[in-house]
Structures are given as structure tokens and as C-alpha cells.
Length: 228
Ligand code: NAD
Ligand code: ZN
Image 1 (tube, rainbow, N blue to C red):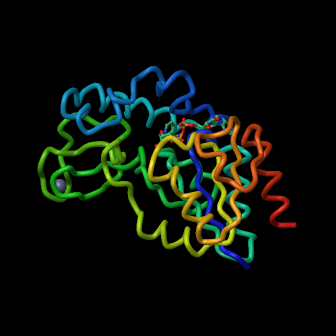
Image 2 (cartoon, protein in one colour):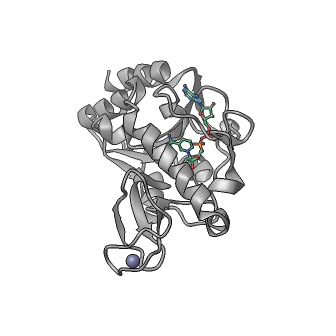
């Protein structure tokens, strides 16, 4: 059976009550991206950025996975071939639904030491100057890949993209690279490509197939078709 690679974005968690990134005019929960999601923002105002992610962590902690997360977990369990799920999301809803995923943009429930790179479970309320349990320095920060930083697992992801038979992007606006470039890689390697989204993404023309609608409807339908 051909390998399936699935990229998910904020749209898959929207119906679980988590706000998307660009939903309301380029703002994430009323914050400008430049104010909360860059290393410069953290250097300038660590309190604001820490508080922002504390709020996102609290929101994600009470959110429940929806039918789209559940369908992808079912696909990963029941499909005869390999199903690789790569998410740009920093929530843990894929795992809560029972799936195994690669978090390319980090995770809200993890902390990262800016000095030594150690990662550990984040407390619900992180403080500025969180002490690293490994090196003892006070350089703890949310383990989130900010704009200008290198996403996680890129070698492994590209390896999967060039060896898959089917690539799907779900609930992502196609404005954040390198994720927005995955469709081109998979297509060039000969995979069938499909976008499932509420609105067409910026890279929609690069997909062979598209299905538009809320993820809780389009994703279970699509999975049903794949499992036959
Ligand atoms: P985005 O906000 O830029 O785009 C969201 C996409 O989801 C849009 O294409 C929109 O049409 C679609 N969408 C909205 N509601 C939907 C629904 N009910 N069903 C299906 N699709 C729906 O998101 P992005 O492309 O993932 O880029 C956002 C960045 O922001 C990522 O890097 C991510 O780390 C971060 N982010 C994460 C979360 C989260 O973890 N839940 C939330 C907000 C932002
Ligand atoms: Zn450290």
C-alpha cells in the first residue's frame, strides 16, 4: 500500500474551539504575529510572549479532539500502509484522539532551554526565566518554533514526502513555509495531492484535488473513502 503523508494546520482544531492564526485579519487571538511569534518579540517582551503561550496552553488543555482528529487516528490505525501525520499545530489534539504525529512547530506542553536545547514538560503557567532542569540556567522558553527559526523533523518529513503516494493538506492557509512547499515536493515525486480546507489556500492551484468544507465533515468522508 502506498504511503500517505498528511499535513495539518490550525483549521483542523478550529471546531475544537481553538482560534486559527489568520482567521481574523492576520491576528492570532488578537495578537499580531510579530508581537508574539518571533524570537525578537520574546527578547523584547518576554512577559507578553510567555503570557500569550500560557493562555494558549490553558485553552488547549481544555479543548477536546473533534471528528477530524478522530478520523485521522482511525486512518493511521486501520490503513494497511504507513500514515505519517505532520502537524503545524502546537496543541495536543491529534495525540488526544490517539494518533502519532510529528510536531514541526513545537508543542505548547513542552518547554525548551534556549541555552542548551533541553526539552521538558512545561508547567501550565510558565514564568519568565524558567530554570532548565538540565543545565540549571534560567533560559526556559515555550518550545514553539517561531518565525525565523528552523522547524523540527525536516529531514524526516522530506524523506516521507518524496516516498509517499498520497499527500493531503488539511486546514492550513499555505502561507507559512516550509510547510506550504510540501505539496510541490510530493507532487514532483509523483504523489497524488489533495487539499481539504474551509477556504482555498494560497497554494491551492498546486493540488490535483480539492475538497472544501469544515474539517469535521470533509476529513471523516475522505477517510471513509480511503478505508473503503
Ligand atoms: P492559518 O490560521 O494560517 O490557516 C487556517 C486555515 O484553516 C485556513 O486555510 C482556513 O480556511 C482553514 N479553516 C478554518 N476553519 C476550518 C475548519 N473548520 N475546517 C477546515 N479548515 C478550516 O493556519 P496554519 O496554516 O496552520 O498556520 C498557522 C500557524 O499558527 C502554524 O504555524 C501553527 O503553529 C500556529 N497556530 C497553531 C494553532 C493550534 O495549534 N491549534 C492555532 C493557531 C495558530
Ligand atoms: Zn539548559
